[in-house]
Amino acid sequence: MPYDAIIIGGSFAGLSAALYLARARRRVLVVDAGSPRNRYAKASHGFFGQDGRDPLAMIAEARAQLLVYPGVVFVQAEVTTVEHSLAHFAVSWEGGSETGTRLLLATGVVDQLPELPGLRERWGVSVLHCPYCHGFEFADAQIGVLGMGPLSLHQALMLSDWGPTTLFTDDRVPLDDEARAKLKARAVTVVEGKVSGLEGDGPALSGVALRDRGLVPVSALFIGAPVTMAAPFAAFLGCAFDDTPLGPIIRVGADKQTTVAGVYAAGDAARMPHSVAFAVADGAMAGIAMHQAGLAD
Ligand SMILES: Cc1cc2nc3c(=O)[nH]c(=O)nc-3n(C[C@H](O)[C@H](O)[C@H](O)COP(=O)(O)OP(=O)(O)OC[C@H]3O[C@@H](n4cnc5c(N)ncnc54)[C@H](O)[C@@H]3O)c2cc1C
Image (cartoon, rainbow, N blue to C red):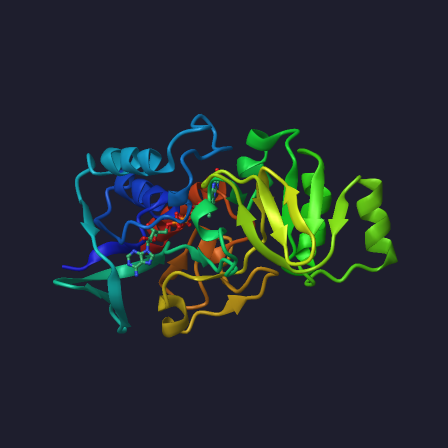
């Protein structure tokens, strides 16, 4: 007998959806590969009631609470194929496969980090993507923004609310007079030229090295890296995507259904901006919508 819902991705969005479906007494299968996007960070910030907690502990606790409900099955595996027939979705992984009436893609995104010496090993500790998540921990410290495109201008202007900020253009941020005036008004220092690497007693950061200028001291470096889908299933199933400044996201309606009937998407893969709070909320909405869609079956 097919599951009422199969959820690919058992992190913040997927587990939240599963909880709502479980509480509606649906049969739910969650398949998760165990690589949440924020696994590099020791603490997750900004989520109601859990500020500063280890994100992996948050997920483990949510999963334990979910598995108390009857009708819920959790499989630790990477889904390799998804097939869509008129009657159901068939999902397979190494050593197993199952069918479900509805499918939720809660597979998240992957950060496309720039290939800069010293950057990757500091990701989530002193190289960061979101000031709301990790800016407060560097309040009043020297903060850097690595130029990755026009969005870096916005990031630098914003970060000056957390501490003295330097924008490293890396020859990738076009700055006209208006942009320079805005940066000056927010006391943001502009350092032009190619960045050659990051230095410090890793994973801490002490400075950004420039090809022609030596080291500029900073304690944290923020980047606006592009993201790509962590799993190919939305494209494979024919779901439409929307463009965002950081990359495409799966198009969903208010009920989190994609443009393919019966396929839902929640969390980072289907929204912007990204955060645990938003992913959990999207998951809850998807769970409710998937349950209520089943009333018409
Ligand atoms: C370094 C870093 C720090 C962050 N810190 C914060 C913070 O402090 N506060 C905050 O609110 N947000 C933070 N974020 C953002 C936060 O991580 C995301 O918004 C959140 O994880 C999105 O949840 P999600 O469930 O959509 O996706 P994810 O948490 O990324 O989970 C997706 C899940 O799907 C699984 N998956 C993918 N493909 C498959 C497949 N084929 N088969 C089975 N499973 C699959 C993955 O293994 C993963 O477990 C941070 C992000 C980064 C990169």
